[in-house]
Amino acid sequence: MNVFHVIFDTSVLRKTPFGHPNFKRLLQRVQQGVAKVYIPYIALEERRTQLVDEHAQLAEKMRTTLREMQRGQIAMLIDGLPEPDLLLPTKEDVDRNSCRVFGKYLADNKVEILPITSDHASNAWGRYFGVKPPFNHREIRENRRKDIPDSWILEAALDVKAKTGRHCVLIVDGKLEAALADAGFELWDDVEKLDAEIERATAVSPIRMPVPTAAMVPLDQLRSLSFDKVDIIVLGMNEVLGSPSKEKLFATLERVGVNRLFAEHEAKTLVLSEVMVDTGSHLIPTNRALAKQAAQEPLVLELLMKAIS
Image (tube, rainbow, N blue to C red; front, side, top):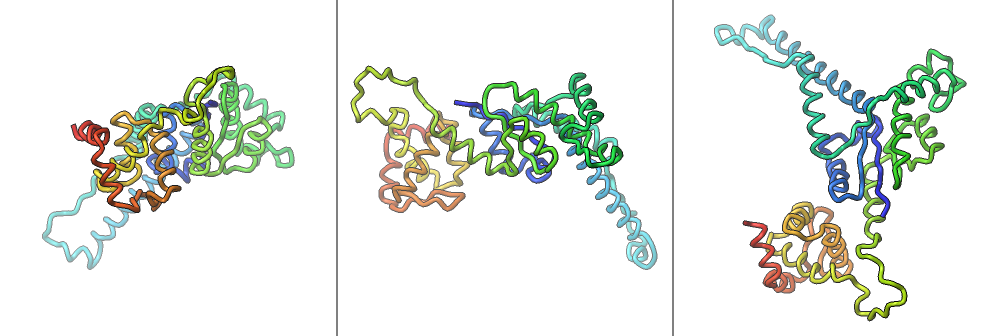
């Protein structure tokens, strides 16, 4: 199975920020070992400092509003009452804290920051002075300078290109896209679309060592034993948990030792077999009697006890 090496550009970090459901889903792929996520230091700092500036602007609006409340006839309304106060952190405090918070979040979720190296510096400036992609030779030098950060990001991405697997960049930036495409990267403009491709690609990956071609294998063994009773487990656990959200169902199954990829695969099979209906966020049984029967299976009850212990 080819590991997906996924690099974020600033343009997609704005659209799919940390904590977004699609970003979390991609992080689950990292935990499953089928993907690795990278953010170039330049892209991370661009986005982090943008957010720090946005926070500062909002804080100043709040201070301006408070000053307005303390002027003119509006101020008379609170005459004699305790003077209103607004305690907000300074921009410098927010800047320092954002470095700590972002650093911990990315480290906890095994997201790799691609640092700026001396080689990156040399190559990035070489691209600028030589007017090589992502710089446009039709632009005057002063206008080309705005693309210097993209040149650093390109150099960081090229380091990842040396790793074995599929190399993907999440990006919505025309000039940098062209340079990355020329370097052989797969370009994606949406995290959800890329996640669907990762699911499709990993769903057909071998889950057992291939059997030697000379061996005679009974046809009733074509389906791996790893799937044995997983459909009953999904149907039964969904019932005893009261048809929770799909995320909660699969997270619970994963916690008690059921392979999440197999569970999700069997859930889709149950939907195709019209045993369950997928609403998008939940799985609803079409035959409650059948679901209750599955819920009484000893294996399901054993997993339930593990889940609540």
